[in-house]
Amino acid sequence: MTGDRNPFRGLRLDAVDATRRRFLTVTGAAMGLAVVGSLPGLASADGSAVELTQLPEYPFALGVASGDPLSDSVVLWTRLAPRPLEPFGGLGPRPVMVQWQVAEDPAFRRVVRSGTARARREGSYSVHIDVQGLRPWREYWYRFRVGRHLSPVGRTRTAPEPGSSPQALRFAFASCQAYWEGFYTAYRDLADQEHDVVFHLGDYLYEYSVGVGAGVRQQQLPADTLRETVTLDEYRGRYALYKLDADLQAAHASAPWIVTMDDHEVENNWADEIPEGNTPTPTRNEFLVRRANAFRAWWEHMPVRLSQQPIGPDLQLYRRFQYGDLVRFNLLDTRQYRDDQAAGDGSDPPNPGSLDPNRTITGAEQERWLLDGFAERSARWEVLAHQTAIAQLDTRAGADVIVPMDTWDGYVASRQRVLGGAAERGVRNLISIAGDLHRSVVSELKADYADPNAPNIGTEFVGTSISSGRDGMDNDEGGLTILAENPHVKFSNFQRGYVRVEVTPDQWLADYRVVDRVTVPGGTVSTRTKLAVADGDPSIHVVGGQ
Image (cartoon, rainbow, N blue to C red; front, top):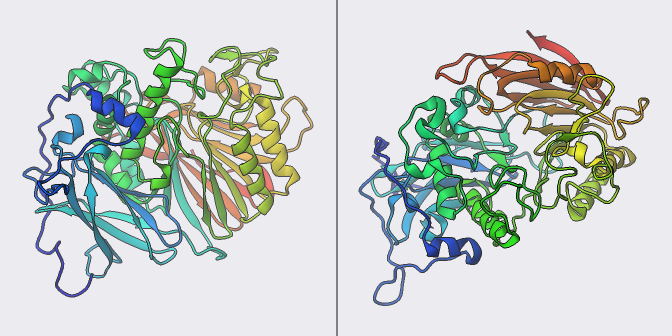
């Protein structure tokens, strides 16, 4: 956009309408949307869609976001929702025209890309703009407009040019943010830092009832939040509730995000087409409709490309992101293709199921994709960004080994194939980043934990939760047991927070940021420890912190 033809000129950010109304249960048409992917629109007399260019209420109550950065493009996201906790955000059936801008400066004096998009009812009035033609490894700022309403400004950044050699990458990763168990203080700290990219590794929301008073938040919420999410409207409403949090919005607006999902975006401990035992959707068909609903709502609320749009109960989630020859991220999906958990979903001794060489946590196709990528050796640091711990975690004191069946401990053959495959293919520095455990656990990775002489193949950094588990403590009994029973585990902590990482050609440096209390607003965030891994040496060194 050039000259004075700027539709954003003279506008200011309106106050967000604080009125929250009750949203309804799913309609038959919305339930069908999860399977067929469309709803009828409102047509004018000549058959064309009638579009709204003005809205009486402020539509950007859920904030803005960007994500999936490439060297020449990035995805911009927003969802129009004047009344976020009502179906379709309180909007009627007509499409809404949304204008967008990308600039090289936060004041938007140097606008480099702009355009319009239609926010449609079938997408719950979300928009996903894949902005092309951007310059590599550059900061940009973006915003949206509908009529007189202007969105908040977001900051984003493209990836480096392929084949380039960036000297540093700064990123953060987080997971597990049960709304009712704590405030998102860690996200406010994350937003105050400067990151090139942020990873969210799963459990963005929880399907459980939020509860009367929303737990520690003490909010009056619609009655619909008191039941488990099953329908499309219920999943949409739950995302809207979480995204109303100002600290989460600030974190999204501070940097591009790369997101995957774990179990609670659908249902606790689901595996492929198999729901958990105590479920409102016990049959395969009921669960697949529910999974389709959950996938659709996830896509509508995440800054991801059209290629991640689900087709019914199927979603292409695993993908790669390259940061020159410095770092490559392999974003994994360990839910959609896994075999059912061995011996149930709890913790058990290694057993015929967990040791079965034919069982998998990734599925055969994703495993081949991962191993073929290892063979390319395209970056100094090869990162697995995924849901849960790869390292063996013996959780019982004494001679008996008791491990969780929902982590890679329940899929020992998968662990051996992936870690052994990395070693065989000459991966220089293998790093795993994960979440799920609601505790921080840093480990040295081995292909075979039954062999006491097995060499280190890589290192793993499991981050704690943003809020799930409430305040926690420096270390609980479970964490102390993990440290005592697993010599490959070098750090454990049971507070809430996130992880900041700085990667250079010589070193991986992880800064574990923890919050003293999340059950009240305004907790204090500090560095609990700083841990380093040197290039070519898969061992962990403490270099700072308490």
